Image (cartoon, rainbow over all chains, first blue to last red; front, side):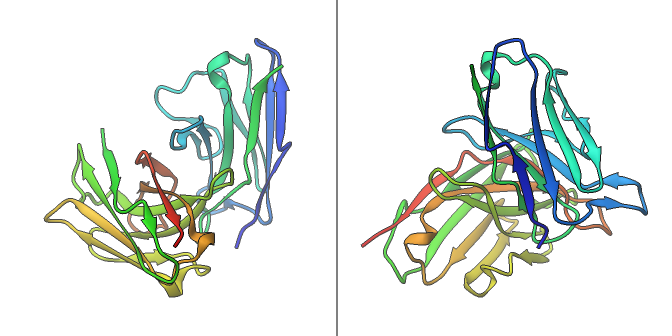
Length: 113
Length: 124
């Protein structure tokens, strides 16, 4: 199985400041045949299901605010919230879809400082 | 816009079989663009993918659960179902059904649509 490890487990950021979440995979999720990273990011608010934010490591899903951005390649990825808003308080998960079984990081909790 | 809704008992006794159904609306369960799957999340913990099924009946399973899992699809009812046998307290979780984007010739991709989830507690 591909193990996904996120850091930090939690972070507190002031409103309007940048939040950065890291995700590392135990092996590459970059397919050389199409040069795509098979990596997605989800946001989960309390009592709600996860919501897809980003796929192919950096493509925002339609309707996702542009303060959310994804970057990275191979085994190291980052989700950045450029200017944290109150509604961004949530747990964020990365997920690889390079291979089955599909696996998630343990989650990073983002709070307001 | 696809909508998914889980249904089933919220309480299952240890050693019995957990059975859940997901109803798909707002689109066709026979769409070639989606695998239909189940994931779970124990209280306060992370996400675990369980299994998925295509409208044709093709399936993928998480090896860690495969021996206890049955997944099936009923296109006439726009539903797919999960059965998990020999449950223990460790199977207590919120169970989500999902639509996983699929392009022919590839593995399914990311989890595009999610149900609201249903809490299943294993307890006598």
